[in-house]
Structures are given as C-alpha cells and as structure tokens.
Length: 290
Image 1 (tube, rainbow, N blue to C red):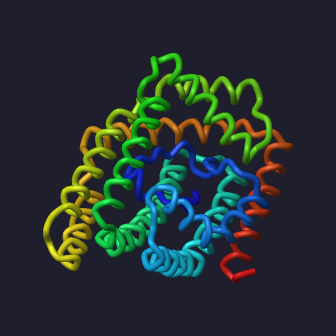
Image 2 (cartoon, one colour; image 1 turned 60 degrees about the horizontal axis):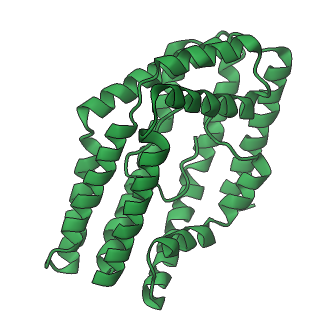
C-alpha cells in the first residue's frame, strides 16, 4: 500500500502479499516516520555511500522534491483506496475486485518508481570512483543478505516464512485471525511460488547495468541519459518468468483475501473500520502538511 523508502536499491524486488495488508507498523509510528523521511532518506543513502557536503546537499534537495510530490499527489489516493475497500467489504468481496485493487496499488507504486529513477539518474553520475565502489559494495552486501533471507531456504522454511508474514499482515488490519482464516493462510502459503531467486537475478542485472554505465568515460549528462533510458527499459520489460510467477501469486493472494473477508467476525470488521479510518485520517493530514 505504501512504498516509501529507497526501494531503488532493490530495483523491482517486491511481492504483493495482499491488497491492504502489507504495512507492518502502527498508525502513529507511520505518521512519525513519514514526517522524518526528509532526514531518514539522506541518512539511509549516507549509510550506503559516504557523501561530500555538496552531494549531501543535493540528496537533501532532491529528497525534499520527491517527498513534496508524494505528499501532494499520492497520499490522497491511498486514502481514497482505503475508503473504496471499506465500501467493498460491506458486500461480499470477489477475486476480480481484489485484483483491481492490486492493479491500483501497482500503478501507485510505478508512479513513485518513475520519480525515484529520475532522481537516481540525476544523482548517481555525481559519485566519484571511490564513492561508486563503496555504493556497489553496499549493494553486494544487501544482495547477500537477500539471498540468505529469501533464497537459501528449503520449502518448509519458505512456506513457514510466508505463513508468518501473511498472518502478521492480515492481523495488523483485522486483529487476531480465526482458526479457519489461519487454515486458509496455510493453504495459500503452500500454493505460492517463490520468486526470490528470479528477483535476485534482476537485482544483480540492475546492479551490473548501472555500474557499467557509471564506470564509463561518458560525460555526466550522457550517463544520466543512459541511466534514464535503462531504468525506463528495465521497468517496462520485466523478466517473463518472474512476471508469470508474480501474476500467479497475486491470483492466489486475491483468492485468500476473499476467503478471509468472507469469514470476517463482527470484531474483525470493526477492527478494520477503525484501523482504516485511522490511516485515512493520517494520509489526509499528511497531504495537508498537518
């Protein structure tokens, strides 16, 4: 629902676990976190690569531009999506409607991704050779962590990870699941196909490609243009096998969301209404700079 931090370094490595059930932090902490992004994003970048004063200032400036755009264009759409989902839960939910919500979320994500890529294309060519080496060393470590956490798992470990993640996500919005709902999660987890290895391939391809561009002898303006062209092409030409896995998983998750929604207790319905109202208010206040 809310793609907010520097997902640029994971490229297209994302999995939609459910329509509105992927934000794992409390409402108050979300608002606090969002209002600190102008500090947190540059700090995150600084943790990947040491910045000189000039580059640090540029990162801060571009972060402000990005956050202003996101606050003014995206947050009201998040609130509207939640209102729509509230309405949908008042009548039996169906798989087609859930997939429509997923598509809306994906469009919101893609618009943010385009903005992030534009900022990266402008900023990355400013790195010197030492900074580039440090950045790609940081990315290497993150890819190693990704391999250990998501790829180097046997089937039982992978399924258990899916179950834990999905239960946590649904319960964040509904409260405790019933035994029947948990059973539906367990069944869906066993049906999901892992996209982790394919996503790791994409991460490494992304890394190699931008490293080749940045290490070239081209002028800064040419490297910016080449990076932008690469990002546009990379985002619009997803690996077919990965796309097939993600689409199949989305169908499974949409079916699971319908199954869980059709078993909602009165307490769960009230919990979701209160929870989503809370976020609608937060998104609205953030959009108004409150």
